Image 1: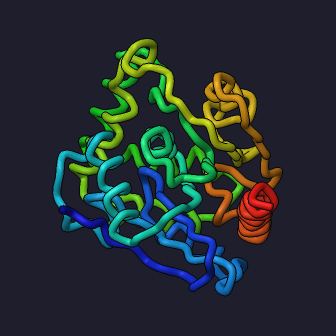
Image 2 (image 1 turned 180 degrees about the vertical axis):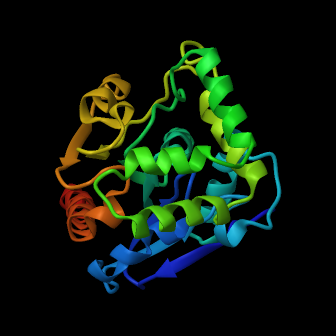
Length: 263
């Protein structure tokens, strides 16, 4: 059994699994950790195959593999319940995990996409994949478009991380995962009967805007969306105090409600 690698923070009773985005790895979360209570939380920041600490774990880099890898890790960690936090690309993976793993007690999604992937024209998808496969220029374009408020130091940091946090094969395959699916019919409706909490950023790309994200999740019953006024695509980096505070509020509220239900 393949076990993904991760960084661990804290030793608290409330267990959280953090999943990363396409153009980063678990280090995206490092700067906000100082605002989490290490005595309250245990956070496992997980790197998928081909990324970060799991860069040398090779595979198919597809949806089924990623879902199974995370579920196997949770079993290996002997977690009986946990909150699943996922960013952007991994939000698709997280929704499928939640539909299969009843140990997930709350799903927190950051600048998410639909569990069906991304809806676009085939021409646009093919063009994006072709540009990314060249491994030159497209990452810079994406960072530039998403970083207009920020300085060159930030841009250089994001570009460097995007290239070096993963292997090209993994980046392309995971992008293919959420691009090249039949948005209308590839998946039956997922059964997710736990609360879904979502964070979007006011300055993110339009496809990740609060209004667009609301459309992706309108089929689920218990959804709350919060827009961070000073964030774009990286709320954990751009608004770290608010990010940690919001996660803590949602998680503490979950376990408090669970406690009262047991009384």
